[in-house]
Length: 120
Image (cartoon, rainbow, N blue to C red; front, side, top):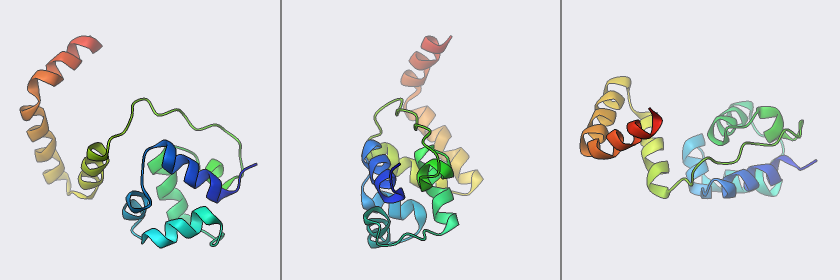
C-alpha cells in the first residue's frame, strides 16, 4: 500500500499538474504540498484531503492510503490552459460563472455544434 505522499505525487503528475497548481486549489503554498508528497507532513488536514480528493477524482480513502481502489484514468489530457480556466471558474460567483460559460460558448460556437453532433 502506498503512502499518502506517493499517491498525491502520482495523481498530481498523472493529471499534469504542478505543485503550484495543487497549492492554489488547496489555498496553501507549494512548500506545504511538497511536504505532503515527501511525507514530511503526515497529518494532512481533513479539509485538504477532501479538496485533493475532489481535484483528483478519487476517494479520500484512496488518497490517504486506506483503500487500494484504483483511480480512474484521465479521460483526456488536461492542458495548463484548461486547469487555469477550471481554477478561475471554481472561484467565480454563480452569476460570473454563467457569463463566462456563455462567452466561451459564443466564442467557440462552431466547436460546440460539432461536439453536439458527435453526442447525438
